[in-house]
Amino acid sequence: MKKRLNEWVYEWLETYKKVMVKKSTYDSYLQYATHVTSDKSLKKLSNSDIQKLINNMVVDGLKLSTIKHMLTLVRQSLKKARSLGLVKNLSMLEDLDLPKKQPKKIKPLRSDEINRLLKNSYLTFYGDFYKALLFTGCRVGELIALRWSDVDFFNGVLRIEHTDYKGELQAVKTAHGCRQIPLYGELLTLLTKRRRRAKGSERVFTNTLDRPISYRTVLDNWHWYLETIGIYEPLGFHVLRHTFAHTALRSGIPIKVVSAWLGHADVQITLNIYDSIDETDFLKATKQLEQSFA
Image (cartoon, rainbow, N blue to C red; front, side, top):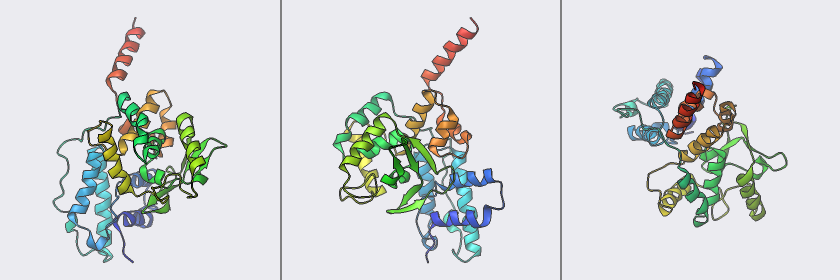
């Protein structure tokens, strides 16, 4: 049976690391492992496959330290794979290019961009999917995997328990990833309307043939949609998760709650990635400081 990189990293963590390190350390490893998205078989793994992992993280605005942690996991897991005869050598880890400086932090969408995204969603078949990403802060695979049985209209929550891998459901990798997100306002309205129109698929979001969504298809459509509504900056789906987190924190929701909704193992992860200070925050804090010393 072929072992693929993304599967092997989790297998290596489960088999060789789980009982050897503290639970908090292991949970951090699992968070970094979510960025190992390549499904290339170990025997066919090339330098360009590893470089693509790095490039994707740079585009998503992730910190250089996070990229290095991901690479450490990949390197250690592949060293073990070599000792087991799963790979011949580690040439795929040579001459990798890391960003020379800290990647620019991803910025949340501006209010005018959010309005354009929401008001023009009728232009694309996947408009509801994009809005749901914004309203929940879910990862793309988690929302693709969402089933109607995960939507609890009675108790007003979404249960995030699975992610999607090439059309198949897989359990989320961490206890923190298994979580509940509140059904509220626009999100509740959106899902109620979709439920009434559902054709029979167990998935909440499907393609035009009522089958599970392909990540590549919806990503290509996303880029087209952004250009159509006048947003020309190259943005990945992560900007929607970032905007959700930023909006929730700015509205005064405790960071511990936001962190739980995002499925983070530690609130420090949420702070490091999302709790940035923008000009509005700075001016508001300055005014509060002035009043304190008045």
